[in-house]
Image (cartoon, rainbow, N blue to C red; front, top):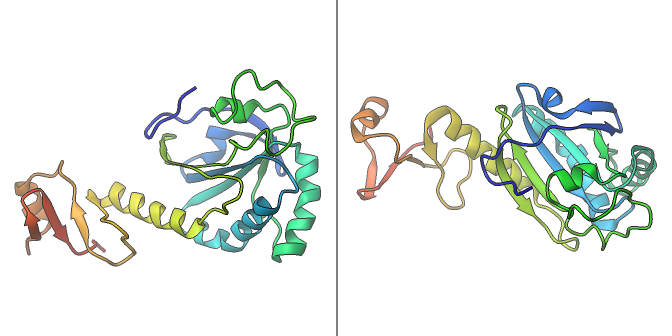
Length: 219
C-alpha cells in the first residue's frame, strides 16, 4: 500500500522484545516514532538503536513512544541487544518488532508484496528498503516519513526538531521556517485570517510579503 502524509497508519498485531502489541492500542494517546531496520547485527543500525536508548528521555518528555522494527525475530533482537549495549553503552529500552514473516514491512510498503513470508535466507541488502522513519500523531495518522540508505545513520536530533515543530503547530496554528529551532520566530499558518490573527497576536507581526506573517514562538 502507498502511505502518504496524513494517511491513517496501518494497525497490526506483532511480537516484540517486550511481548505482543496491538499497534493502535499500544500508541494510545501518545505520539509515536516507528523506525525500521533491514536486518539484525548490522553496523549502522547497531549505532542507531543504542543512540535511541540514550535519548529516550527526550522522546518521553514530548509524549512520544519509540518502536523499532527489524527483519528478524524478537529472540534474535534480544541477542543483538547485547551487542548494542557493548558498542553503544546502552541497550534498547523500548520494544522492537520481530518481523521475521515480513508482515509489517510489507504492510507499510517497505517490501513488495511478493517478497515472500520469511526472513530466512534474506540479507540486509535484500531488505535495504526497510530503512524508514514514521512519526505518527495520537489520531493515528502519519505526519512524517523519512527513508534512509543503509550506509547513512539517521539524525534523530532532526526527528526531535520536527516533532517539536509539529506539536507546536497542533497547539498554536503556526508553521516553522527553514532551519527553525526551539525559541525562534514562527509563521502564522495561512488558514488563520488576519482578523483572527490580530486577536491572537495583538502586537502584530512582521510581514516581508503579504502571505508571510512572522511572530515570536508562542509560550
